[in-house]
Image 1 (cartoon, rainbow, N blue to C red):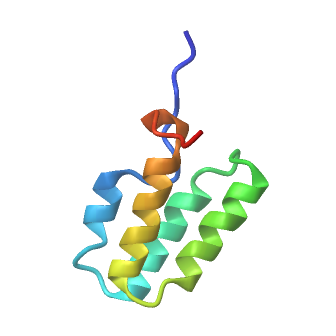
Image 2: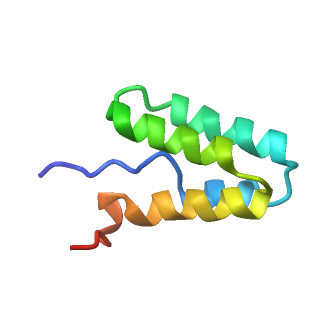
Length: 79
């Protein structure tokens, strides 16, 4: 049976950036994205753009949470 890998972020990552300033939080999120070079190119671009567009830490946390919930490993994909 194939083991489902996690996406770019976990909920622990989302909680980790809560107390960071925006610059540090973005650097943290981008490091998580860059740690997955085998992800599909369009997903890398989508995640990077979401991080770069965030205007504050709560907005970044919301975007990261959306990526967590949308990943197939969570079995929450919308049909």
